[in-house]
Length: 136
Image (cartoon, rainbow, N blue to C red; front, side):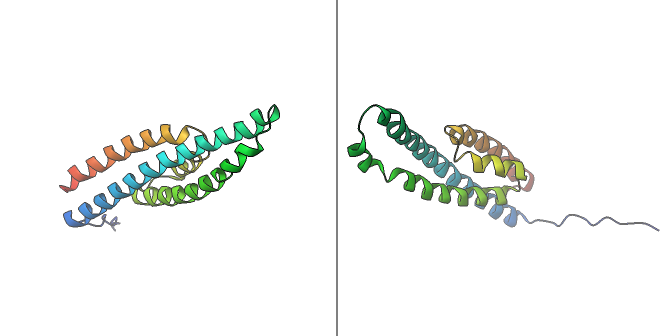
């Protein structure tokens, strides 16, 4: 009595090329949103320093009227960032730890820049290996 293990489904070169192309697109969108999110988070931190540190010594109400849009902008940009994170994560089939680190990178100052560089390098290695494997 032999137990046959199911074989992995075969993937055509065309299917592999399409999946790799979609993953590269998701990676590009993630890179752009990681940089934008990181910049808006740093601007938001600057706004908070002006409001709470400088504001403790000087009246900054006049300046704060011009800066009140920053938290809302970062909030909506972060939502778009989360969408690109989920898209890339699903296409690359990474684990939940990677998802958590990518999500937190949008709310920890400077982390999005560092993690974006790491994610990009690892994704490029994986996608290049897949392209070589399937001849895509």
